[in-house]
Image 1 (tube, rainbow, N blue to C red):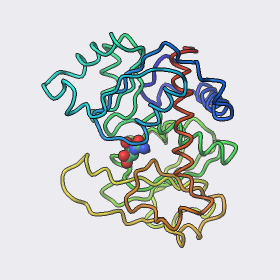
Image 2 (image 1 turned 90 degrees about the horizontal axis):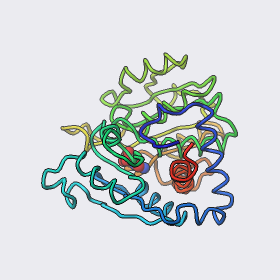
Image 3 (image 1 turned 30 degrees about the vertical axis):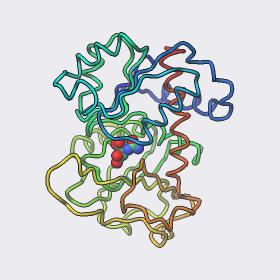
Image 4 (image 1 turned 180 degrees about the horizontal axis):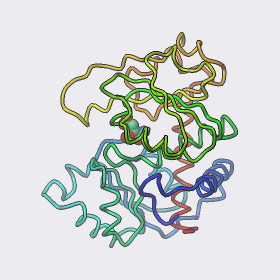
Amino acid sequence: MNKLLDCKEFTKESLMELLELASKIKANPENYTEELKNKVIAVMFFEPSTRTRMSFEAAIQRLGGKMIVTENGKDNSSAKKGETLEDTIRVLDKYADAIVMRHSSDTAAIDADRVSRVPIINAGSGKSEHPTQALLDVFTILNRRGSLDGTKLAILGDLKYGRTTHSLLQLISLFDNVEVYGLSKKEFMLPQEYIDFLSSKGIKYTICNSFEELPRDIDALYHTRIQSERFEGDFGKEEYIIDKKVLDTFTDKAMVLHPLPRMNEIATDVDDDPRAMYFTQVENGMYVRMAILKSILVDNK
Ligand code: NCD
């Protein structure tokens, strides 16, 4: 890998290779402490973040790298003065060996890559993509299920503006016999372009209107927050809430995933259930990001 702009660039083979590296790093992180020695990574966030930014920062430090950070780029960088993203990138690529960036524009990573002479790593671009999140999501499903082929996945919440779901669909579509079910308020239904994309990969997408309509033997319930910062108006709170009672209508294998932060989508009475995987996702995120950084900055293949 020589950059990470979106999930379209993965094949099943390249994805599995990266996930295997993440597994090796997770098993023996002490073997990788010198990988980024003498490397400087720019971490540039123009939108709020807790997990993605701090797990990237932890990943860089655990690999022995150094970093320069703009954690509130919208207000604290020259973007506030009107500098274009492209010019900011042309500055940072003189200081750093790679740029990890999050931005509100759907095309931010592609625009940055066009002018950057160092690798761009997309840490979230508008409503379009969040590849590093999707990678840790599939890593978590794989670790729990043993395989991604045949996954029965339900996506819930904000399917319209949620970039994590959009990226996840790209990755899961690389596998065989996958089924995808959608459950959301009508304002937040999955846009047709993604349904068409799934269909082009031979994956049936079933729109559901209640938890009862989802198959009982679902493998993963992937919930997401309504992305209220991405639209005007107020469409209220999430109506499809996973609590212990709802979860107990599914089998023991139904893992509950969420990129976090959660609002009301998952009740806290689910947190201690062995099927709750959202804090495992958080943990996996750091190892997956270590694998991404090593793959781009060291292995570069
Ligand atoms: C997600 C994001 O930024 O898209 N957060 C994250 O990176 N884990 C999801 C969200 O903000 O709802």
